Length: 291
Image 1 (spheres, rainbow, N blue to C red):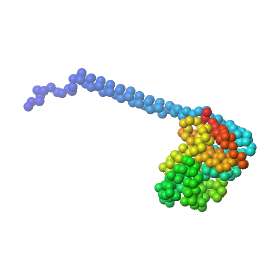
Image 2 (cartoon, rainbow, N blue to C red):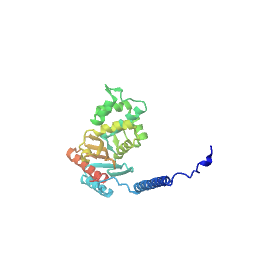
Image 3 (cartoon, one colour):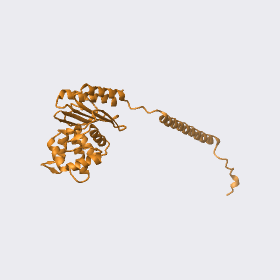
């Protein structure tokens, strides 16, 4: 074959080369614009300040303290002890009488956490039969209805030495006299704080105990003074002239513990004592949650 008869190859026609360059140039511009758009979008999102969680206006700590101390001074004939713990920073606040009280049924929280602790250790079971009932049914009755027979049965199963050791070594309660059930309001507050922080029980047992406290009786004390929609897990106690309540109050933003002990020294005035507990609760709500 004689290749000399064919002209030399000079590449594609000029108009085809122009169209190719034009296409790639257009594609490059699109990619640059898209890149700038993505960069600006990401940059603006990163630099845009996050909106804070909306909270209602709260009172200052000094206002809360003044309100609680005013309520306490209004009833000099009644010993009142108040402990509040801010669960966001673990700061505790104490007001009123700094003395042990007969804790009444608030001490059932120690029995409940100890028994569930023994379940986790394999020493007890929620399904075991104690006095003709399952341990879980006794636990629920003790917290929800504040059933004393259930309390005695569980205490006897655990043993008072065991309860005392558990309170001291696991919770950190130093001077509990389990024989006469005397405690400081701060002891029950500490128990609730550590329960909330899952330091006492695993997740499922913590949830079980809180579910009982959520529906516990005597809701006319602390729970009645908490705004609707705010979770309250409480355990009240009453014996003769002593009326107490203890609670975890959780609005999802600023949870706190509140324990109120009262001793009427022989005078039992249910409406008056209910009002005291509600008024103190309202003062804490105004500080921790807002109004």
